Length: 357
Image (tube, rainbow, N blue to C red; front, side):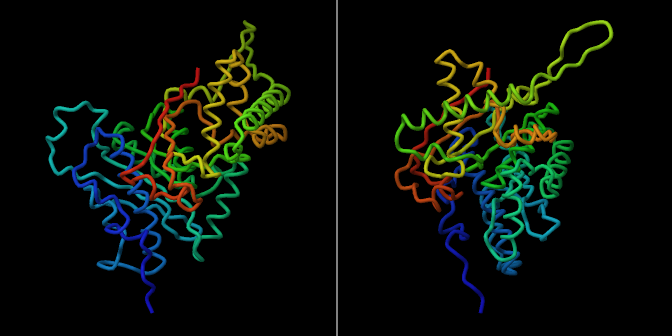
């Protein structure tokens, strides 16, 4: 007996069908379409597991509705699951962008990554990736390395300005690390990260603002103190001078500004809210120097450094556009962490741009 598809897989039931007249200069449209492409990757994997092919496949409408075509599926070599996809935009009107600035053009390519799929075929492998993420070891995994090579190939052929990166949950972590890697090479790729994991105690879930502030301050002071004590300053001296060169992989990313979409009721990603907002408070208190140190590290990365492992805090970034979903009906965890919330037409969003300086 063939199992009936869930409603979440059906585009005409839960998809953004209200976007039948797309305006690519509108941030809400860009967000909704990007999230829809990520859902397309989820459904691709569901199609694979349930052997839905040809006219029975449910995934294609998730990108075809917005004039994209699938040109490559990205697979995990360990479990053969579909973890990402490369989509190419098929413009219905080649002259439609003549009178709008380039920053409002649609992307030529979108490379999207799904999050964890808790099904028998994928839950073990996805769980392993989640564990590596929490230990700052995600970039050592073959899934990340294969994904990075695929992105680099598209960028080399099309140019970074024509490529968008996107991901949800675990997929957002992969897209984030790829975006950071490419930014350090000088390729600033537009990046859309939905519910990106922030691996720390979910302080933002506390209801008492004073308790949250105290936890943030204590954490900042602890991390900053350990950073100074354990890391020190790397120096490079030549034979003719005593000048010191500093290479800071964190601040080299300042000009790359990814888009982060978080729900305050999602304990997996809500830490980004406190991370950025607390940084601004520290600046206003005149102690931004301490926060600059703490912003670059976590306890996990510092402990790794103490044991000789040079693993940066994978989730930390200097700059971002942080978009919070404040809709009162998006508080249940399954909804708060889900991808479907991000194309709903009635969202209550709050957006803030943070720049590291």
